[in-house]
Length: 312
Image 1 (tube, helix red, strand yellow):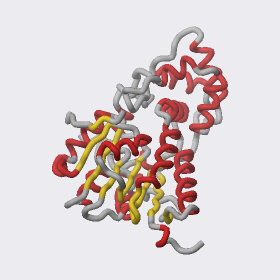
Image 2 (cartoon, one colour):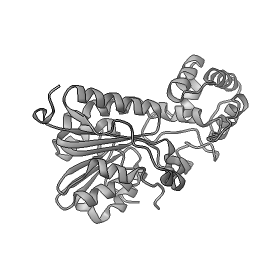
Image 3 (cartoon, one colour):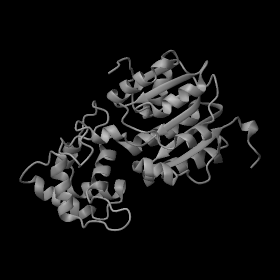
Image 4 (cartoon, helix red, strand yellow):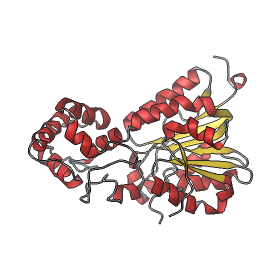
């Protein structure tokens, strides 16, 4: 069910690749924009400023606290923005609820907000001890602790390898199953310590904590991130206006692969032109300012009428 979000509750997240996004989307006055992951309103505020006067920004996010913050941040454009607590897989329902038949701009930033990583309530980070939750949408029925408690060893290993390319997936899954037989694994510290005990630390320039990939895979599984992205990508061509542009920022090879293949399929079917032959990456200055953006990949496409496409 899509909820038209009306509540209000500091700025805990910097929008990634903002200049590149605005250049590729090239927003104009009067356009309708759909921000599929409004988060803390960073990209949405730039879009709102660009499409005014006469434009409309539909802000969608599964996290009610972030959406409330975005609403406050975008207050000066409140008459031209609407807010929906929903998953972007429900984009079609959002447009129907908003009374909008087509959009000119679509943006989906698939990353997790910095404030979500640091809030204990989400249980996304192993830097603090918190309940092993990981739900970005508090209405989801299954937590990370539920998966850890119930999944068979093989399914746990497959999840870690498929979603996070964790090379030690079988070793981690085996230890999880052994541990849960004597005591439940219910906190981030318990899980992180368990993984660190069985996974050798990585060395080199980009050394990461041994628990990083396990936490990434669990978060993606709990929130069905790849499935929801696939659903969104299947809907986008149906509601794009001719001349409209769509941009996606991914942070994981699986996400980027889905976006890349979808855009190539759209182009082969004469629905769009791919604007990015290769993904746009953050430059060193942005990485120094915001190290979390290091893995960001931006791709964009322009949807045009068939008559405007060159012959095959």
